[in-house]
Image (tube, rainbow, N blue to C red; front, top):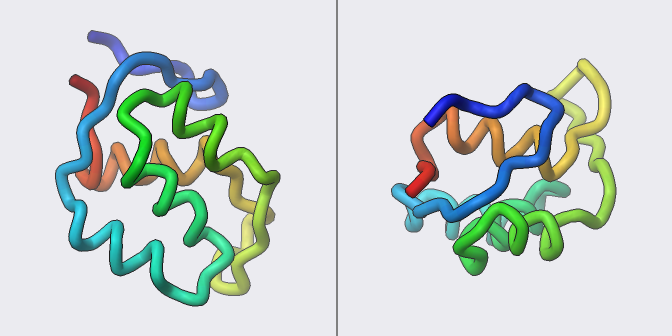
Length: 85
């Protein structure tokens, strides 16, 4: 299946491959923690966006600007934490 364009919302089902890692990230004092928590409970991208879309967050170590739920799930997919199923 071809990947989406970077700004397009993802659709369909996904599988978490690194649940322990995501659980640890979800429990950190990090503004992205709700994104990771949403990845752990959602089984579709649509559900993830509903759960995680509280707006962009700012992370001091990321200098390019705010991070959105879409940016973070794309990063999780590229990093092998989740995959399409």
